[in-house]
Length: 40
Image (tube, rainbow, N blue to C red):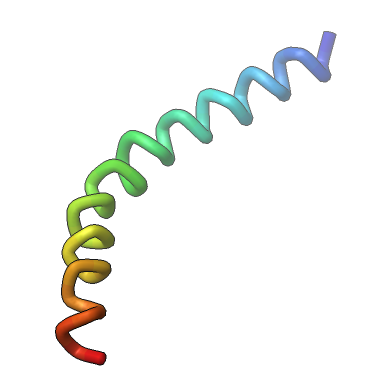
């Protein structure tokens, strides 16, 4: 019973990480990608 609960904690942490770090950084990443052709 420890392995499913551990996997659940990992998936919850991954979802938390995605919502708090990946989603807010998406506009910054797209903005940097738009600037790349201008800078190069």
